[in-house]
Image 1: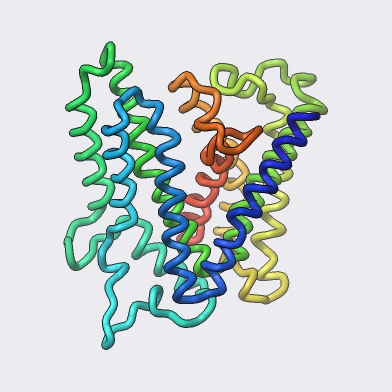
Image 2 (image 1 turned 90 degrees about the horizontal axis):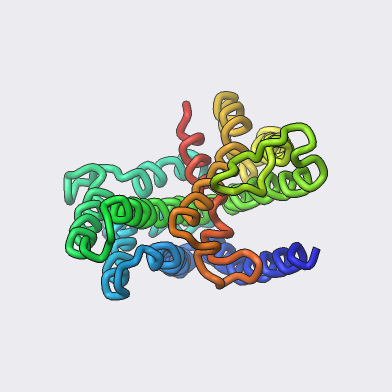
Length: 321
C-alpha cells in the first residue's frame, strides 16, 4: 500500500508539472505553439537519453545519438515553411484549436514522414537516423563482447531514436488541435492500467495460473489484463463517442463507426502492449527502471510507455475512412 501511495503521489506531481505546458500549447495560440514544441522537444531528448544511456556506449557517443532525435522533429521541412503570401495553416493560425479535418491534415504532413517539396524524399528522417545510428554503432562495435549484444543495443537505440520523438510529435500536433483528444490519450491507459492492477490483485491467478508474460513481466496476470482490457474498452467507447452524443465538436475524436469499433478493440490492447514492450526493453538491458526521475515509477518512459502506443494508435485510427 505504501508503494501505491508513492506511485500515486509521484504521478500527481508529474501531471501537475506537465499540465501547464498542455494548456499553454493549446490556449496561447501562436506563442503557445512555440513554447509547446520546445517542451515536447526537450521531453524527447530526456526520455530518449534515459533509454540509450544503457547501451554500453561512452557518453560522447550517446550524446551524438540523442541529438538524432532532432531529425524526426526537423523533417519534413515543408511543415514549417511559411511566408507573407502563403501563411502556414498550423504555425500561423491565430485561433485556438483545429477542426478534425485540419488535425488529420497536419498529422499527415508533419508526423507521417511525408515527402516534401524541398528534399523530395519520403521517410527522410528515419532514413537519416538509421544511417547515422548505424555509423556510430559500427565505429564502436568493439565495445561489445559479441554480435548478439551489439545488435540488441543497436536495435533498441534505433527504435528509441525514432519512436520516442515520433509519438511526441504526434502528441504535440494533437495538443495544438484538440486538448480533449490529448487527455483521452492520457486517461485511456491510466484507466486500463488501474483496472488491470486492482483486477489482478483481486483475481490474479485464481482462474488462469500462468502469468501473462512470465519472462517479461511475471507479476502481470491474465485476469488483470482481461479486466483492464474490458474497462479500457468501456472508457474508450464513452470518451470517443462523447462528441457524437453531445454533438459538440470540442469532444469529437472519431468521425465514423469503423473508427469507433477499431478504437474500442485496439486502444485497450495497445495500451497493455506498450507496457510490455518497454518492460521487455528493460529486461534486455538488465535494468529495473530507465531512471529514478519519478519516485515509484522510474523514468519518463516508465510512465509514458502505454501512452506512447495509444498516441500513435489514435492517430492511425483517425485516418481510417
